[in-house]
Image (cartoon, rainbow, N blue to C red):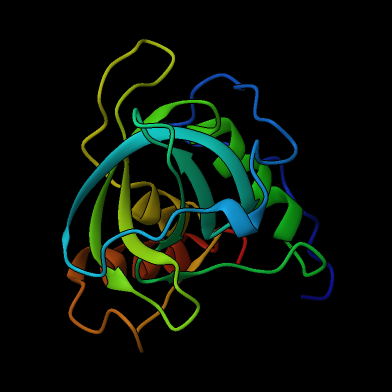
Length: 166
């Protein structure tokens, strides 16, 4: 994007910055296999690998790698990659989340819609972080993997109309 600067990540839903560990407490080899079926998982976000993959630690001390459903964000080295990562870190880093799962991807990651169970005011959020990333112009709706997700489609349409970031 010629002539575009990376603006500071801001959003009406953005809570104050949270502390996130720079590395997960466990290595990828110790990530526990989660069930491939749909359901829900809750845990604390302990690491944000990139803007669409996070690690959570459950109450049972199980680390699970989550691929956020229906979105695709820029890699860290791409335009807005760092901004997207910082936004997600500030939004859910160190917070408890509920993940509505949709099975696994080909890399064994649990695919899920991520909802913060708390923010700076310790209130649950009704919009998924997946949608929040798209509506703020920091990820695209990944139509190939979520073709019927009207919420993501609407969020991307709105972000494009507002000419936000991506």
